[in-house]
Length: 213
Image: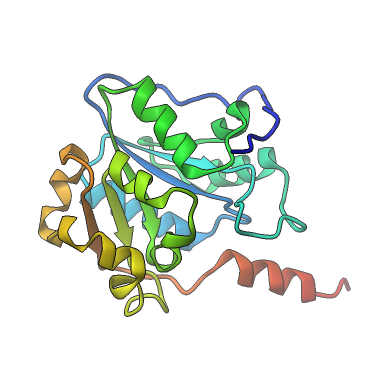
């Protein structure tokens, strides 16, 4: 297991405040850049999971992706805070302060440090397609309930992916989404709803091909 060198930036890497019994969604990603598709997932899961708060975890970098065009952490956190205005949403780069590289490290830390909170891991269906490639993905599913939100191009593949098949016995009906946060892991729900065609990689590609006037 490799940990990054901890990076602490005032106002950027602090853990959001919370209290016992709170139902908290965890939505992690590089957000390079964040866009309206991310905001849609945040708004829909916050409402449909009946959460008290949702933490947007801006990662130092995804281990499965190339970091050559990764914007600085502070810039990505500030951009997310500018886009997301809901008072229940908190944006943080706290993983950098602990040197976390993988999602399972973040989840283990939070569930052990705050066992009286009800955390839910949130991710797009495109991530479920490749979830079996994540480091210790089975441990993630065993530590915290998960909400999967439909994404364009993944609607058919995600529900029949390797991870979805392996976890099929613990899948809840979509109508049970409001009780997911207080369900014992493993438990997960697949949410259908509004979708956005936007993607961070496509936005970066367009920016790279725009010629200065």
